Structure formats: C-alpha cells, structure tokens
Amino acid sequence: GWLSGMILIALSAMFSAHGLVLLSKAACLTGRPSSFYSVALASVPKYTILIDLAVALKCFGVATGYLITISDSMVDALDHVLLTGDPENDEQLIITLLISRHFWVVGALVLVLPFSFYRTLDELKKASALALIFVFMLAGMIVAYANGIADPCMGNDENADSCRGEVEPFTNVSSTISKVPIFVFAFTCHQNIFPIVNEISSLSQSRLNIVISCSIGLALVIFSVVALEGYRTYGSFVRGDILLNYPENSQVTFLRICIAFMLALHYPLQLDPSRRCITSLVKVIMNWWRVKKQTKVGNVTSMKLPGDHSGGLEMKQEETLNTGKALKEGNLYYENSQNDEKQQKVDADDKLFYMITFSFLSLSFILAMIVEDLGVILALVGATGSTLVSYVLPGLIYIKIYPHMDLSKLLAYLQLVVG
Image (cartoon, rainbow, N blue to C red; front, side):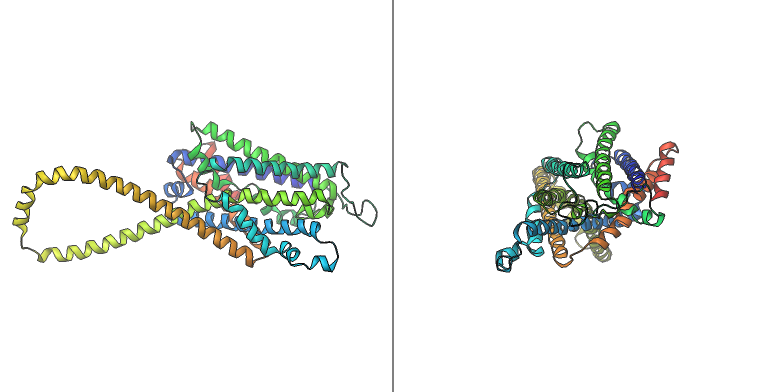
C-alpha cells in the first residue's frame, strides 16, 4: 500500500540517518584515521574480526549482485534492439553472443575495472555524479509515465487499463512486514561514513551531520517519488524490477543501459569499504602471526642463555671500545633503515591493496558467472548484513564508547533494540 510504504520509507531513512550520526560520533571520539575496525576495537574489542568480516561479506554480496544486474539489464536491452523474430538473423553468432548473459558478466567486469583501483571516495566523486544523472533520468521516466506524458500500457492488446492493478493505502500486515528488509537495504551506506570522516576537510560533527542529512534526504526524496509514481501507475501489478512493467520501447531500452552504467559506477562504493575491512583483517592476522613467531624465537633464546657463560667479559670490553665508532655509524644507519622501513611499508601496503582488489574482483566475477539469480542471497543480506550494519552496530558501538547517559545514548539503545 502507498501509505504503509511511505511510512516504512520514512522510518528507514530516519533510523539510517541516526545510525550514521552514531557511527560518525564514535569515529570522532576514536580519532582519524577511522574505520569499522578502529571504532569496534575501542568499544567491543572481542568482536572486531567478526564485525569486519560481516561488513566485508555484506559489501561483497551487494557488489556481486551489481554484476548480475548489469548483465541482466544489458541482455534485456539488446534483446529488444537485436532480435527481430527472424531465425536467420537471431541465430547469428554475433547476435547470440551479444544477448548472452555470460558475455555481459565479462562486460560488467570490464566496466567496473577503471573505477576499482581508486583509493579514496574523493576520487570517485565524478563517477558518482554521473551515476546520479542516470538515477534522475530513471525517476523522470517513471514520473512521465505516471502523469500521462507517455502511455504505460502501450502495446497491450486488451483494454487500456488492463496493466493497472488496485491502488490501496494499506495491504495485509504479513506482506508489509516481509518487505521490511528491502527498505532497510535501500538506505544501507554506513560502511562509507568512515572514509568521509577521514577525508572531510575541517572535521566537525556539524559538518558530518550536514553530509548525512543531505545524502539520506536526497535518497528519501528519490525513493519516495519512484515508489509513489510507480505504484500510482501500475498499482498492485507493479513488479520488483519496475522496468519490467513498462512497454518494450527505445526509451525503456535506453534506461536499462543507463542502469547498467549506473551500477558499474556504484560498484566501487561497495568494493572500497569491503577492501578496507579485509585489509584490517589481513593486518591483524599478519600481526598475530608475527607475534607468535617472535614468542617462539624468544622462548628458544631464553632456553639457551643460562648455559652460555663463555666470553661474556671479553664481549663487554669489545663493545665498550667500539662504542664511539658504533655511535657515528649508527646514526647514519638508523636514518637509512628508517627510510627503508617506510618504503617497505608503502610497498607492502600497495601489494596488499592490489592483491585484495584483484581477489575481490575475481571472486565476484566467478560468482556472477555461476549464479544467475542472487535474489535470495540479497534478501538474506538485507535481513542480516544490512540490519547489522545500519542498526545493531551503530547502537552497540555508541553505547560502549560514549561514557555519559543522555538523550543520544538513549536513542542509541533504541537503535540497537530496533535492529
């Protein structure tokens, strides 16, 4: 129903914005550079690895869904353009290839590659601006069909209103509740608040609140327009992929291609936070392994020392005589070694960055090639991963990290309970 749908959209936007505010406050309290790992380490250190893993898997699932949707959109678009109904034409190798889903999964990977190696969200601002243009074009088309500028039932052999269902303010409760994960999923962007905290100039909570209000507010307006106008056009016959309701014409075909490019531009917004979380996990594991090795070496050394009494005095005298020379050479060596260590750290970070990016792209590509429908997986992501990231973690982290009991902490408890 249109009224229950609008209530759910408004509530989802409100709780999403509040979750972003809670995470941004936690990030400011822990200091920059911030990440899910850093705020979790300061608040719930026992669960840092699980939190990073949950965020990484959630973003991976969404990104893989993008590849599948890109390929499906291109197949649907070209199916209308290339197929004529003539077997001689439709069975040509090039036509068969161009309407093959697997061909466009490869094409989707090629589309996302140029944007997948940016290191900051700031580098993605032009791509995101272009993606927004595609969003506005889609919303504009839906408004045009809803207001009679174009015929939404064109090509329908029956009466003009046969493609329209009933428009009601409410439907049954069970049906409404079953759709809640979709609304939660729609506003989930909480993994990207940390790069914003890190990259924003003149960091302050008021500036972060402006960013949050503008982004969630714009999403709320676009979602509301698309939902209301789409439902007003087709009523109860409206489908999950609303483009499937519209006539197969050149305008809708063009919009399918626009959606494919839009999702390609959005892919890095899922890859980037997932890569950050995986990087944190890898570094924690590497540090744990290094400490374990050092502990073993220390144990072996301590076992050997008690039985070794020879040469102790001679070694001390030799060290004393060479102290002056060692100090002179030591300063130069220290400076060089510090520079070498910094360069090695940069090289190691670069290597890890590329390894994780290539692994993410490869696994995402393989899964998109194998699985044709991620509907069940994405529903699971919405019901679990999105709820965890948008509701449970913001409330839990803020409660643990903020020492005073005031209105903001009470609202954090509410966020956690709702999650």
